[in-house]
Length: 495
Picture 1 (cartoon, one colour):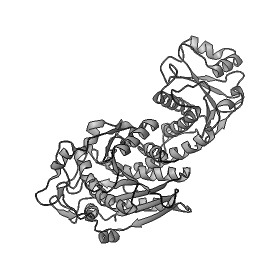
Picture 2 (cartoon, one colour; picture 1 turned 90 degrees about the horizontal axis):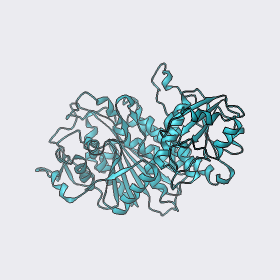
Picture 3 (spheres, helix red, strand yellow; picture 1 turned 60 degrees about the vertical axis):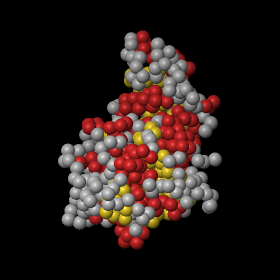
Picture 4 (cartoon, rainbow, N blue to C red; picture 1 turned 45 degrees about the vertical axis):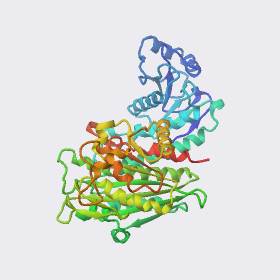
């Protein structure tokens, strides 16, 4: 979708649909008053009839408004001003959803009458672009004939702002387009079926991302190289599949040569049967989403590259498939990790932490400023937080605060969970340095505790996104989270 900032008189804007926010109690802002007068009071009459309603996000389409250069005028209820950030997001999503049903190919949102608490016009423009992109995202690559609900004719979404408030908006829109593109990429990678999006496919996508870039270099470590590094935990997961595992390394150099990099680590289990500890059949199709942590890393790196952030960022994607077979790892097997520690595999369905622990050890070689891993790690996280927030664990309070703040600013929120030493005892094993599971109690916490044993030499945070990375039910599909959180966190290190 294309985006641009328009100025001039709103009545002269040429667009298929002009979107005009309206306040409660028939309150008209300066722009709305002007357009109402030009259209001979049509807006006022519609409001007097009660056609728009008072609920935030309600819309009313007025066709062929007199005096305007648009065939459609869409009124959208803003509710009581000033809006909060969540309210503005809802306003934009509702308006865009209404425009999509009209068949309009381009739309323009008037921002002059919008007031969002603690946010300036640049933020409003950027947020509008990102919400419009998410609302119009569709995945129908494998449908022979996509139905009407999947058709989107809206190809351009513009913003109108008076000259007085235009400063900085163009740059904000450009960055928003980059972030929205990253979110869309993460959603598409997550939505692809497991027979298409396997470790080799992800490796190819990484190479595509690095093609022609002087700032992004890409390397792929194969199973032979992993074996030479001693990644016994990683290789124990891929032992049962014919799909070769890959450790994908993407190094972005946008900062000073000697500046320590920020490292992102993504869990990329492209399909998870559970292995020998096989999952129940119902819902197993959703285990293609078990690589959404990796997908978010891809989306974040795409955005970083497009925005040309002056930072050094390393992305490590642990890509593997977890399948049952005669060569698969068994419950009771013991493997040695790259760190030298041994793990007793009590449950082969706790495979994400096995690929991550070796990848987190590999991350040490970069002498990182900080490391953040992103993983659809535990069903226990879904029980604890649902799909509203990602679970955050960290061994550093400043790092945790930075990520929580980025989540609040981006609307892609996280909630900090305990990483207390008390929980470590649940990982005791009679036969190895640790077990790979800690029992039913506090399953998300003990998974994080397991990972913490491989991150003692640097600042580290873990995002368990099992509840936030995809939706289930009738709206099944990847969400692209937490790309926005990660990009906002990275941007906080600029300057």
